[in-house]
Image (cartoon, rainbow, N blue to C red):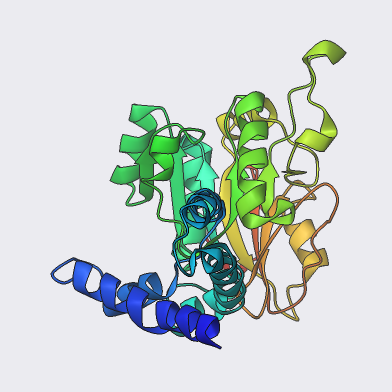
Amino acid sequence: MGTIAFVAALILIVRPAAIWLCTVGSPLTWQERVFIGWMAPRGIVAAATASIFGLTLVELGIPGAERLTPVVFTVIIGTVIVYGITAAPLAQRLGLSQANPQGTLIVGAHGWARAIAETLSKLGFKVLLVDTNYANTQAARMDGLNVVYGNILSNQTDELLDLSGIGRVLALTSNDEVNTLTALKYARLFGKAQVYQLAPARSGDERLGMTQHLTGRLLFGLNWSFADLDALFARGAQVKTTQLTPTFDLAAYHEQYDGQAEPLFLVDKAGRVQVATSDMPLKPQAGMTLISIVPVAEPENLAVVPVLEP
């Protein structure tokens, strides 16, 4: 019982009190201070240190030294269990996390990536862009978008990213290797189901191709590569949103754009974003919002429909 009381004191008194005192006058909110004060799992360093010192103290005949290692391992097991069970619910209760965040991290801030980001942002979703091209990041800032100048694969860039509210990653750069490495990196954080990348360029040389199991989910229904999309937008294509209704359904939508519109995202009635992928086509219904790439040259006899330009 003494060991259990010791672990409880560490969790409920010592750690919260130490953090509360250390963060007095800091810019942290009280919710952030509470969460930091709650989290302090012990691990392999504490175990290794206790094992070394415990054996030495036992050899020196120090009274009670034989209890050091068992107590430390109890602390490790206890804190890992308690924090593992309570961390996520506590963060949600304090408003520091969302159960199903719908924000998007977009890697690449070139012209059509900014168009996609601006469209999602205008619909009320958090969007964060990252790019190594300074001109692209400046253009994004001029458009009022949240952007970070840096290498998405760099640890230094990680420190600049505010991923609160972010639930998925779109790798949209012209470099297939960067897209793949981004997918691998962020699959550990968001899960592979929420990490997407453009289809690799079709080089015709298998030695230059990407191994499928190393990539994220391939974006968009036609397996667009960067070159494909870049050419499409160079011809004047735009990103548009369309609200589907009982009188303007999916069939009417396709007729509107002569079957040339390429759906990118679907916002369902609950406000969740679905991404069009090669393995899971979208299933739009009335009341949902489609975000698509549409050609600039539209038929002259278009009917008036609820289309919102970004």
